[in-house]
Amino acid sequence: MIFSNIKMLDENFKVLENMFVQTKDEKISYIGTTMPEKTSAEEEIYDGKGKFLMNGFFNTHCHVPMTILRGYGEGLSLQDWLFTKIFPFEAKLTAEDIYWTTKLGAMELIASGCASISDMYFRIEDEAKALDECGMKANICNGVTSFDPNEDLANNRGWNETWALLDSVKNGKFSSRIKVDMGLHAEYTNNDRVAKIIAEEAKKAGLNIHAHLSETEKEQTECKERHEGKTPAEFMENAGVLESQCQFAHCVYVTEEDEELLKKAGSFLIHNPSSNLKLGSGIAPVKRWVEKGLKVCIGTDGASSNNNLDMMEEIHVAALLCRGATKDANAVSAADIVKMATVNGALAQGRKDCGAIKVGNKADIIVFDLMTPNMQPDFDTLANVVFSAQSSNIVMNMIDGRVVYRDGNFAFINKEEVYKEVNERLGRIIKELAN
Image (cartoon, rainbow, N blue to C red; front, side, top):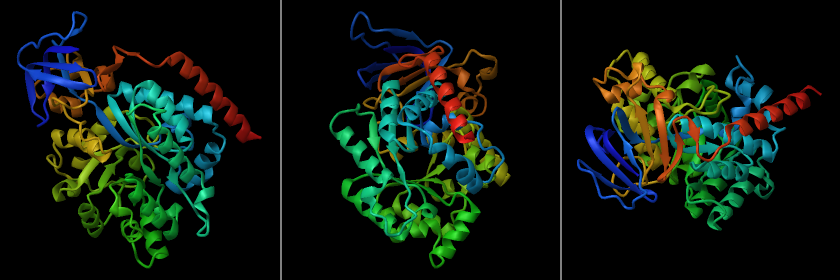
């Protein structure tokens, strides 16, 4: 496909006018100011007049199958929400439930400009199947939990699912869009021994580690009580977790000493503003992270704690929250926020050929319609994207060179079928919980 005469965001976050971008197979093959040669008579030329092209988003922390839990367990703190509502509901989910509700989440992600996600859940083979069929990229893990200090991990579902999915990926069951991470749910759902085993095996296998970290003040305080004054970040360091590339979600209560540990380790900190606000967990010190040069990403978290997977909304909230919390209108720039949602997210997933509009990179392209009331006048396009745009402004999402969404239509998802399946399954689970 050739995008002609289109406004675009380049790899240095500069907005360029009247550009031509060509894709070939999975990659971007040309960027320039003149029309490239067509590769075939059938190659489409996309009219870029009134449009804006940029890289797709990387949602680096979510629980996509939780879309079936949207609106369930409202008004509770994190601990009450998890243990009294979420865990009992999740115990009823079957493999097919996971498959269908993942497709529902994929629709929301794709329509809001996502190219790829980092997801933590269970029955991850079924989740991978659904995401792969929808055309998305994903780093998937099962967040291992182990409350028994003597548990044999050979009997742990999360542990076994991780290695089973890794075997499936290596054996070509899924496309190269699907990658596997090692999941460690959190300090408060594990113990030293299990964390050390996870750290050792992830390092041997060359897997990134994905975990929740310092999400609430309660978590931070109780971790120090359990582990001789160690914070969750220090717990992770002591277990050897930081020896692998890590993605840590939330990090609301990390100390400045924690930040130095995480920076030295090259860890990625994932900002989840909507979830943290909705659950009353607090506000992460993102301005401080950016000033210190920490690697910051953005994630929506799950649709039960957000309550959506809309990356456009998450970007908007992240930008506003940081400025409001610090009383600094320049705390983070529009470019800072976009970098978190694109380049940093791709690097966190280990996808070095993704995250920016650049020749040779994967063609993960989203297109905005600028000729709408909320995008006019177009005085500062990047500011409009961060502070004005809605998902409804996105008219195309291309992932690895394939158009997966265009003008409201999904290329690989039957949305009516998904709605029917998810709602029928929700009805069954609610009846089971009532009995």
